[in-house]
Length: 97
Image (cartoon, rainbow, N blue to C red):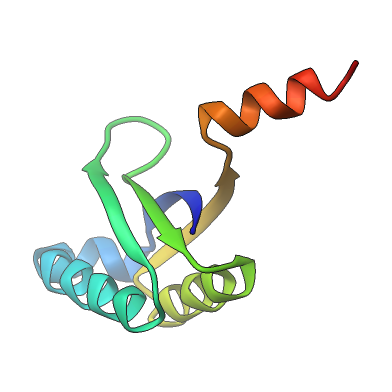
């Protein structure tokens, strides 16, 4: 499984309907699960992003589809980063020679 960091912000519609946000999170967790992935962590954050999620998915295409499906609901905008665990980081750096 590949790990991704999702930076999430409410749209104007999402902020207006913020009380429904926990239900939308539950639906997102279910959707990603049906796609073969999972949420590893979820945070409400202060600052530049409203929420941050650490998720896993089988591949980039699955995560891209998931992010597009989330955004198409009109309540959130996402930015996604592929995350490399420490062991992969060490392998990448050591491969530099």
